[in-house]
Amino acid sequence: MSRTKIGVLISGDGTNLQSIIDGINGGNINGSIELIISNKRDAYGLKRGKRAGIESLFVNPLDYDNAELFNRKLIDEFQKRDIDLIVLAGYLKILSKEFINAYSGRIINIHPSLIPSFCGKSYYGKRVHEAVIEYGCKITGATVHFVDDNTDTGPIILQQVVKVEEDDTVDSLQKKVLEVEHDILVEAVKLYCGNRLNIDGRLVKIN
Ligand code: GRF
Image (tube, rainbow, N blue to C red; front, side, top):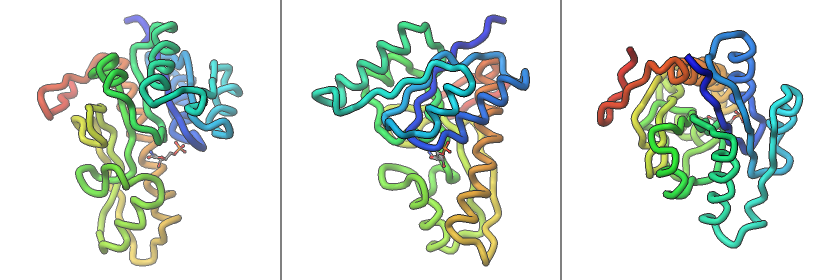
């Protein structure tokens, strides 16, 4: 089976990106990251990509008159490299409808909660874990899902639970959840690249 060409969008540290790089280098994933794009010039994930010998670009949203044109630039760059799968690895901007249509069923996102809890527009980064602790939840976790034209609402691929301990802080919880994110993101990308994911309405079947 030919290797899946992967494009990754990031905005920050890139530990999820790193987990995919390591998964590929470990022979775990039948894919190759062809291009990494960040909307943030100082995203450490760009350094991770360059260190791994992967083309890594900063594309400045401020260079474009509007979000549509910025997203069109992203589409152009990915299409130029025949990208099959887009992975949002801590990417904090909303994708345009044009982008989502161009890659319908081929965009995977990682979210640091058990969707449908604590997700949607205002839930990202530490805010998610603050809300989990404030609510008094006993469990939280991470979700990998396909991206549809809303925020964090696409069909769920994998989820994994993390126990919330009484002495957990936002930072300790974020750390525990991030480790789980890495595991299920690598697994989801591996399954996609192995052509083992089938979307059936809201259901993602793994064969
Ligand atoms: C992760 O918590 C991810 O779930 C969220 O943003 C964070 C990115 O972490 N979307 P990293 O940049 O992959 O380290």
